[in-house]
Length: 455
Ligand code: NDP
Image (cartoon, rainbow, N blue to C red; front, top):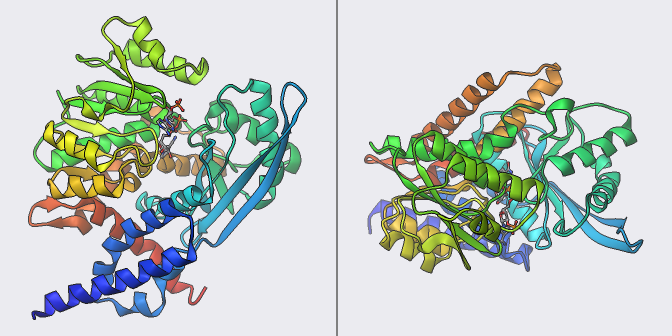
């Protein structure tokens, strides 16, 4: 048996044993286990000849959050009823900076989902090159159908507990699914009222009170920059490509907008009730209409098809529509193996994960085996937290950079992240972005942990 073969068998055995431990320590947390497996399967081969990481149990420590806080959120609805939700903050890893990561309000939120997101966030934040650790939080609260006053009372109650665990140099939350500008405003107002401090403790703030230009656009724009970089690396271009987008929230709408800026055609968008399709590609006017529908009016995506003759509404997900590229931008596990096979058959050449873990493991395997360009979430959607990091810098320095400067910083950051993936993921002219992003994100955090000794 060759030495390389023996080594890879040994690596597989280590990975298997490691994952058995992760599974045992985290019962009932499938999303978290899935996320750890995805990272560990890239890292084990990389550290096979680097015993220090094994001896100091770096991967074991990395898969254990530094702290998980769970708390009660009582609030009163408009009818005077007392309601109770559960909130969490997962402070995953602070090796390279204060915990940083969004807050999600959605009925599906649980500890497994927040641990998966906090774990992923650690590597993503490292990839940005900025000094930010990883964290995530949220509540199993459904903002749909609630009045502005109900959302305000909920946010205030959430912050009444959360404030004692966060701080500009400790943990700096941001938005995520169900948490946009309105919710950040309510939470920041409550933090300021309780602590009597005006500090950069949340990002995604309004421009009037310390927010950064380009933060709203950053995740969607950044995702399409990354897609463009992948295509350019492989001597192609995004211009003229038909792009499948899912979701119709912050990330999806700005991804669609950046496609238009770069001469590509976004042809689908969706929400949890179905998807819309426009054969010739949405126009800017239509994208603006969708932003207003989902952002301000909080309506359903089917209403777009009622408004515009060239747009049709369909139940289900958009992955059966013929296109060149896909930018899934809604939520986790929204593309399964079967849908991935259909996309491959239909000629999709590149997938850029703008949502967090939108592809099930079967789908990732199918894309990788088919040799598609596959951009993983932690690299593709890092522009959001990247500009959040720049918001923190501006808040600390009490300055505000202009839009052109921030747009350039975002574009440069996405190019640097892409190049780091190439550095660690390229073999013989093809780039394995999954491997590249995992290793590039891992190295900085792991080496910082090594410096601290056994903590
Ligand atoms: P929004 O709340 O603005 O939008 C979410 C969109 O996804 C909505 O269209 C929503 O539809 C849809 N959606 C949510 N859950 C489901 C579901 N179970 N099935 C189908 N559709 C669903 O969130 P964002 O745009 O901010 O976030 C989207 C993704 O991007 C998430 O994975 C998030 O973690 C990730 N992300 C976001 C960042 C940001 O800066 N905002 C940064 C990095 C990652 P409906 O209206 O019906 O609920």
